[in-house]
Length: 198
Image (cartoon, rainbow, N blue to C red; front, side, top):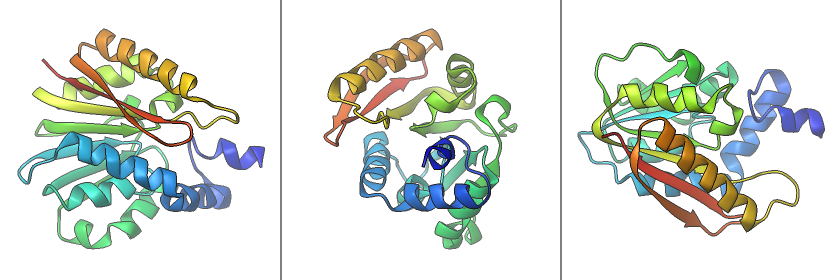
């Protein structure tokens, strides 16, 4: 079981496919991803970047709200699952999927209006550098949503609040402002830090 748990940070091979299947179907994961998309209040003409898109649950929700969604994940296994889940939107040109880590984002011709990261920041090599990189691809006045739900055994609401505090601090250090926290009542709660690129 421990080797499967390791797969959630960077799914690879057969166990990675199992991890992606779990991420794409576990009720709390699906609720958390759809909730995060709702919080961003996407509009039809906006562009969204999701980093650590996993099996594409949030992308599927976002693609019904706006016409340009880019999903990035360092796992080719996750990009494959996201592509299958969003096949119609990919073929229609509304969704683009890219295999890359946050530390090595591709060059994007147009800045994004919104950025989303759901339960991925804790897996980045350097969260501050990652958030700084995301700020560079987000237009001035654009919004970022960083969602965290502690998944360790015995995690509590106190752990969720601590994660929210850490994320708030990192967003401030990366140059974001107007940070606010939203909470989704799961066990433990999911927290979303929403912030603006000045």
